[in-house]
Length: 423
Image (cartoon, rainbow, N blue to C red):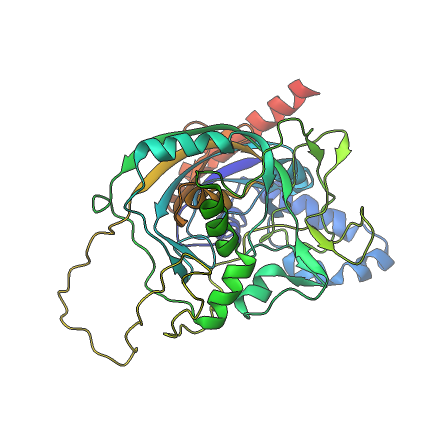
């Protein structure tokens, strides 16, 4: 078991492919590959026939990761090598994780981050540092969180983000349920007044159908209504200080080891409630609850300049002005990008498995009477692996085995020592 510092702009699956490209021909992993070839050759003929489809992969070092990171995210990506892949479930479902994130206020997107398309805007001039500081208190401790529709929960064999990207609602009789999560640490690291930071709202605007879906599925309308009705900074996230931690759900046997993270609440005595509930079935049904963030490098629907048709009295969201047609030329090649007028805040948190940072960013916007999105994300720690101490740097791979080899060997030996101590 080891870990690598994932760079931005590539998927977690691509990181594994890049690492395998360096590990496969290496001296460090040659003995392991030779043992695998010998073991496969010694299998009975019938088993060899069943494993024939794996023949193409026998030249690769067996590898998986312990929890996916979106392409835009950076930080700790745990890598299971060989037999270590069987222990990856612990990192997906039973350990705590620490993150740093930047929340940008004033707008919401279909993906809850700056990689998506804008589905609504709302006033942000009233937001202050003190107001955000006070709002953070309601997110600490145990509570309930609803996974975003851009997750890989399955409904009738189809992932939620596939419904979202196609602009389709969930099948009749299904809804996304909240799940038990815990935030043991949440603090503000830095406050950025509007116009003083580097982050921007995305340029892409959702079309009318996508905005209507967002109002329903992303809870923009309900969040705005809750703020207006309560007249304070209460958010949609429900608090439950007495709820015991639930046990993690079992991973789906068909999950992709390279692209999926099984998300659930921490281990405990009671089973965690399913996060996709079919309304017509009895309580306690267990549909597929595989959860991950979708790969952002998939094709997105074309952007439309159709404005939002919802009446302002129904939803307090300002429609984005019509975007310019793609055929319209730019005014000048030296047009300077103006700073975003909305404030932003950098947060640090420690959370349980199954927690969606982007959902906290979205909910924080509602808690201060506005909208918000995640603009930056870094996983700084996962279980025993910390970004500052025992994580391989991605850049080391390009330096050759003489650089990364001793570091990887040390990480593997340290993991074995910790495992032996724990028994």
